[in-house]
Image 1 (cartoon, rainbow, N blue to C red):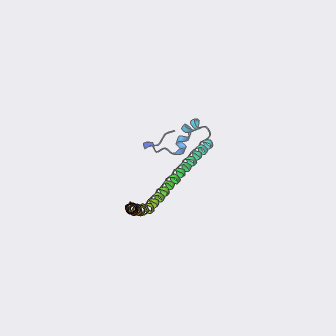
Image 2: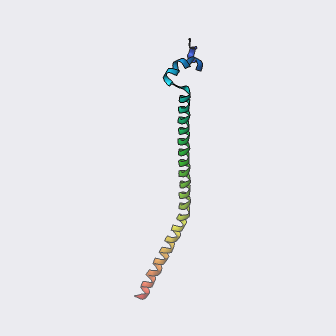
Image 3: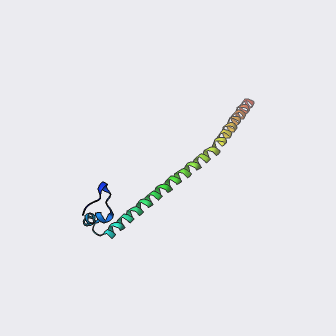
Length: 93
């Protein structure tokens, strides 16, 4: 048996060399499909987690965009309230 040049061997040329090491070709194929399925599931899980992280980041940005004006308004009202309390203390004294 002669292998083709430039490492361009066909599957039929390689099978006699590969089969003793793999045992049953069907079992090998099944293992490869299970491994591929595991990789696909893992990739889908990572994609879902990254998407979820992106959504949480977007929600956090949305919360910050609403909370910023609210905190500014609260601080303005707080300073006005402190001024009124200060004025009332002057009147009481």
